[in-house]
Amino acid sequence: MRPKPGNNSHNLAVSTNNKTPTSVSPSPKLGTGIAILLLDAENLRLNTETEKFLAQICSYPIQIKIAVANWRAMGKYDTELHTRGYELIHVPPGKDSADFKMATVGSSIFIHYPTAKEVLVCSSDGVMTHLCTTLQTHGLTVYLVRKQNDKIIVLNNKTRETQAHSLVSVPEIPTLEEFINQLKDLLKAEQKRTSNAWVNLSRLSYLFESKYQLSLNQVVSLRLPGKLTTDIFTDYPKEFVTHHIPGTSNFYITLFEKPISFIKKTSSLKTIQLKPTVKPVSKIESKSDLEEILVKLLKDLKTNYKDPYVPIAHIATEFKKQYSRPITQLMRDLNLKGTFPKFLQSLGAFKLKKVGKAYQVALRLDGLNAVVIEQ
Image (cartoon, rainbow, N blue to C red):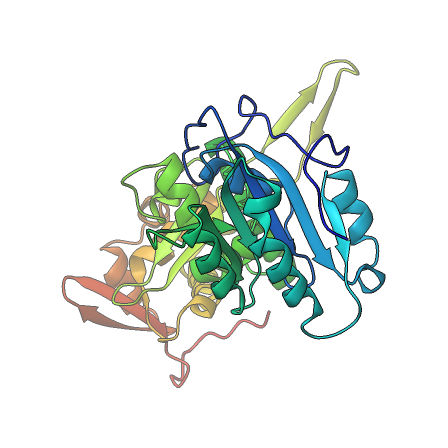
């Protein structure tokens, strides 16, 4: 069966006024002439988005679309192409049947379609190179269309210029507000899964990319130009708390949660006390009470460190977060004189070392006076 020109109900006139730009700028359409799309349907599949991309490359509207295949082996693909305006040519089973028919039909296109100016030869088979050369010698502009990995590559057979179209749909970049909420949801889920408040940035990045098919850097570069990925957490202290281990690339994030104390329910004239997120300082009545609490804090923090030593500043920060009071203020309330490092040094449970100008602390597990608190 040979395709014939004329008023064929399966021919598709592509409107030049309703094309949506993809990765290339559409070529200006010339007045006289048409473009023809020749498809080896056994070798290459084209969706409607790819067709739009091809239409933008052409200088003439694609008015004839011909697909060649053994349609008995193609499922419902023939029905799909028929509804999209393709003329279907059936070939018998055989490895090269579609190739031979493509070459036969293609080499006579300029005879049957004298107004043809451009031909899109769509096949990933290398034998189509000869057909492209033949058509080019008859004055036609020929584009060889093939699939390479997850892209459609279009080669202008004369100029050797190539253009690419990705077959992978690009996910929509969330707004900044959506992005922050997505991160918070992932953090909450990971905290629940691990029973650990702190989540490593690398783990969060993996979770985000797995769920949204986007990297954190892609979103940050668009929504916060010039910023680093870590800035999304440090720039929003009301949402996130961060912790970076000095001398390493380890960067940890947790959620900032405001303490809740009392809420009055005026409708029933009753006062409802919610469980406070801030622990009561009233339970710390002595030096030994404070020592036990600091030991527990250090043991909790150590899960995020490879080294047994933890910066004492991180312990002070965690204490203030949990008890809503600076450790130094509580020391004054308990009449414990001296600085926080000296106080830790006076306790049998800890050992200190100085790194630069800062102190780090570890549990003195081998000491006789070490305090061990079971979880």
